[in-house]
Amino acid sequence: MIEHTKAFVDGAWVTASSGEEFAVINPASGGCIARVADLSAGDAVRAVDAAHRAQPGWAKLSARDRAGILRRWHQLILQDQDALAALITLEMGKPLAESRGEVAYGASFVEWFAEEAKRVYGQTIPAHQPSQRILVTKQPVGVVVAITPWNFPLAMITRKVSPALAAGCTVVVKPSEDTPLTALKLAQLALDAGFPPGVLNIVTGVDAPGIGHALIADTRVRKVTFTGSTAVGKILYELSAATVKKLSLELGGNAPFIVMNDADIEAAVDGAMLSKFRNAGQTCVCANRIFVQERVYSDFVARFSARVRALTVGAGDQPGVEIGPLINADGLAKVEAHLADAVARGAQIEVGGMRHSAGPLFFTPTVVSGVTPQMRMASEETFGPVAPIYRFATESEALALANDTPYGLAAYCYTRDLGRAFRMYEGLEYGIVGINTGIISTEVAPFGGVKESGLGREGGPHGIDEFLEVKYGCFDLGSQDDRV
Image 1 (cartoon, rainbow, N blue to C red):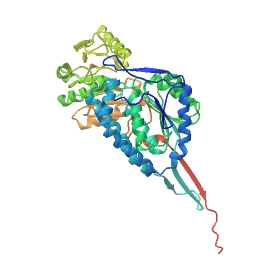
Image 2: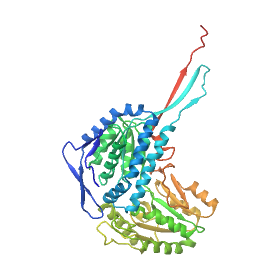
Image 3: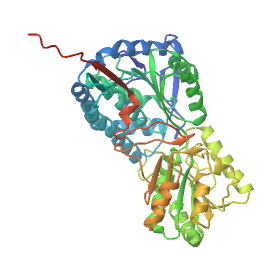
Image 4: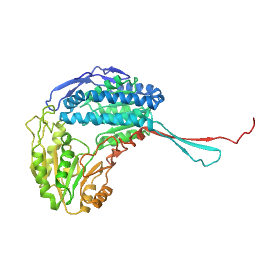
């Protein structure tokens, strides 16, 4: 299953200059599954060298040729879906069914942007002078650095890399040190698909701050795209300012999930289960705060709690498992701290509330009622299988509570009133709003947040624009010459 443990630079598998390696740990068992090349900041610059050399040739390829290579990559990813899914589960821990879904989801971005490569259109603008003509074209921004997280080790790479490659940019990827193996497998498939050397590079290493600083300080890097915490995003924002790089940031969230009195309660429970407990609650768009209107509060809590109580916890490669482990001890400690704070302030545990016997990083799916805005889990992203439920009285109160956060990535609302649906959609200060649905991620629509949840959009027709520069040309044709 594990084919490569070396980094991928300039079309070749390379070791760290120091010879150092780091361990990749299976969070379900705690065992070491591989030792991977531990590149230094200096090693990472070699990847920028390669990307910089490859940039002119890749940009000069026709859009059709780039699209053809991306389509081959897409086909190879789907052909290897089972192996990739097993690898994701091994190093990240999510249930195998979810891993298979992630492979399909990640591949969808490759297919989408293979098609978008041929649709980077320009404009002609009526000129301000009779003798002049104005053209507007779009060109690749240049070398891109993509820094990706552990929770979707395949999809977060393809969602960033595919539009960059389609636009004509070369890329250096720094995957999370928790989940480098999936990235290296993607690199092998890219090599098989025919990517020229240097077009896609994978830098592995545990010194994320040092590698990140080296990559972003390099003036040859013209674009940075990052998914991760808001705290780290702000650091990258500041570093990128020194060389005025283009920047995309998909940062933390604090998603509200609002259930109105007129909602279809069973549908709302279904949506909350999908949104909250996918990937054991370790997603940036999961329902972090569930607000339920007074008249249906007790009914929702009872139905939701019954469904949560029935969830199966265990290692992701076991049949029927729905909740896998948390990624590491820090993630588990945060879940326990949020829960202890809520209980100390008067919240009630309806289901769960304890570690699970499946292993040291497993936590029982939990429902907490009577949560208030003063509790830590109201203002911080829990990132675990804990569902806090708040009570509210009016539509305006729900909006105020939902928007009372510096974050603005995703929000959800369940209502059967059409007017209320539009009022909530327009009033929620979020980049993504799901009305009567708990799943909102798709390659065909723009994904991204507002406020401190980030900048830019990934996916949809907007996604490729993040990797293009607009160029304006003004042509003066001169006076007409009638000489033969």
